[in-house]
Image (cartoon, rainbow, N blue to C red; front, side, top):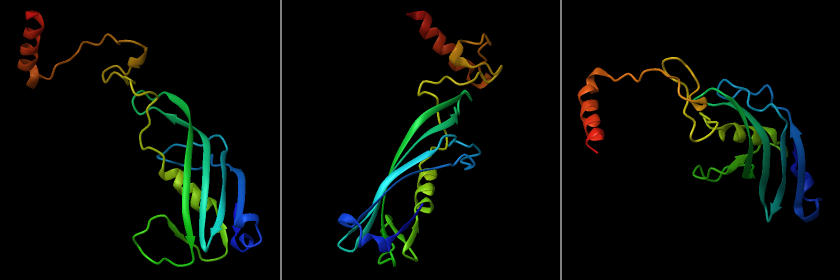
Length: 169
């Protein structure tokens, strides 16, 4: 969605509101396509004594695969975005300023990268996900797999010591 900053002067209270949805089904994030539902964006661009600010709220459902058990799952994602918009950068130290080259601002060029950068690299279906058995591949969330627990021969003596503490009690 494109916003024309010249319209801010004529807008009530020096603020332009926006409310729209975009389709990001083809957007790839970490080799997956997490945005199967429309991404809903609401917010405003306002001029406060010459300081132009952009505030947006991004809401969508994310489709993901668990990094431990590989099960597909969905969750709701909400993101708040805030930036100042300026024609030139006064200082390199400020991260929340976006330099604009014209009076027309494409909101998707600002908001979509923020949404993608906010996505975690690895997602879990739950914090206590047990993952897959490294031997047989069974989902351990469904129960034990029955594979014999294999002890690294380098740690066999330590396992014996630990077992002796268990039997002493």
